[in-house]
Length: 200
Image (cartoon, rainbow, N blue to C red; front, side, top):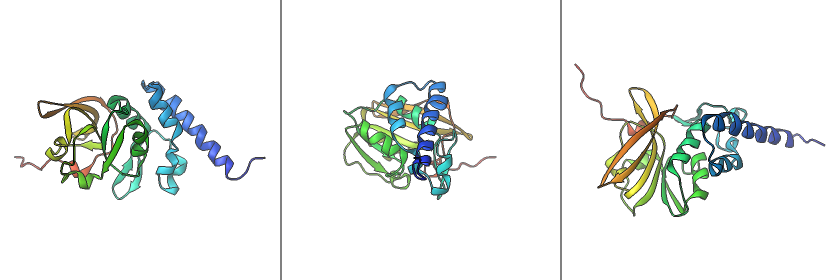
């Protein structure tokens, strides 16, 4: 007999399967470990109650306070490009109890988190082999670059003239260079805006 609580759960599971098949696989995300991580995690648990029915849509979902949960493809591509491993000491700049933190935590050796507001004034307490920024940034603060170990990887979104892209970087000779990979609708983090310049 179907209960009132079992039916919505079945619908969420069906929506999660559809997300894997129609949003991720069709966009070239086929890494088994990425698909398994996203298939196992209830995305509906990370959105406001009123948005649970839309948890698996292919767009960002407003969370309130100027924050948004990125579309599933954004997080899938970010994980695939970051290639987290159990050997990584990782840092996530995003919501400590958010969806990407829950995806990333089982894939790395250790995970620390900073909110975007905290990240701009971060002071090194050790270096990280992987930093993931859950959003699009106009500039990478020196304080964040200082937290990345030599040879370490950084996965983020970038925003240039209103266009957001997924980007990956590596620290070489003390510098972090970001390589844009693909245009994606990554929610913009206002805390990482570039200083305004005079225009004539």
